[in-house]
Image (cartoon, rainbow, N blue to C red):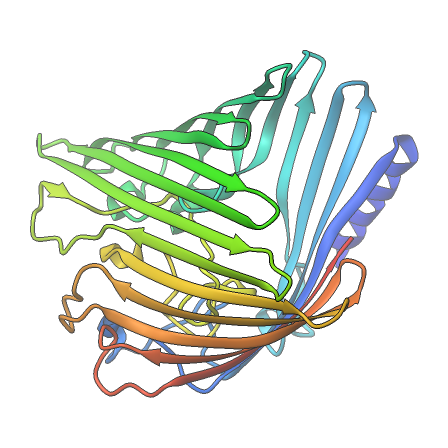
Length: 419
């Protein structure tokens, strides 16, 4: 509580000195599920849930994202965001009466300099994400330069960022988890008139001396095409991931992975039907020198499903399975159809159906089928920038997770207020 009061007083003090604009998002959500979904290797284990993966059938939490825009000088602005929560209802660790420290952390903090014509230079803890949140969607420490041609047809982005050990939860290679490591990202992107372009990331990793890994480097190259008119929007991305790991014993592992993303949406008089397809390569691990994984850095990809996807809850709180393009190294094929129909100004009906499968057989079940899912829900506009989402989900797990598994029923609700 003391931290919260201190931050509020600091904001008030800054506001009195400079013109400042506040914005943010308040969210409360609830989920009920009758069952859970786990990877096959977790059958006989006592799974310890962390974060938003809880063992209870009922789950609710609340959070607040608060941001501020400060422009003390011409052509110079500062953006700051803090994250308050997530407070889990009924969890003594986050909402109990004896909780001493408020769960507050910095979300982002960066400055942007725009005095150079057609150029914006941002530095600090900067939000960065690729167009599908397929490889990276995080706030990272670095400097980014964006240049737009005078005619507006070409935009160029270049950046340099450094990752810290706070990102270890997003790493997929255990040998990279070492203190004192040097982890650098280099960004380069080109966008031609918002029709065709490419985003690329180069990652170099020099671990500390306690690691048996000498050096790791990786590339992600993501060319894309987007076509849009009044009737249809088609977005296609091809992503190539190459990496090389060199060890002190002179052994070496190379990896080549690919991903395909297709999203199509129609705008018609009878609603907005759409289709989302994701394909990533996987590997059974039999070849120890050459692999075919598609390895994101920190993905936040949404396919549109509640149980076999991230859904309105960003993840299904009760599952140990969390939708991810890497999919424990197996790769994934996700095909999801959706349909939104506005019944009136305030009420929009939502339907989705999808099939998800692994692209490599599970080493535990020797199966690929992960499941079939149907969603039916509604979004109600409470007032401007405030929405209530209620989604019912039926999931039928495939044999990838095991034999004769029960169906999963879930009801997810979320109240979201943007200001």
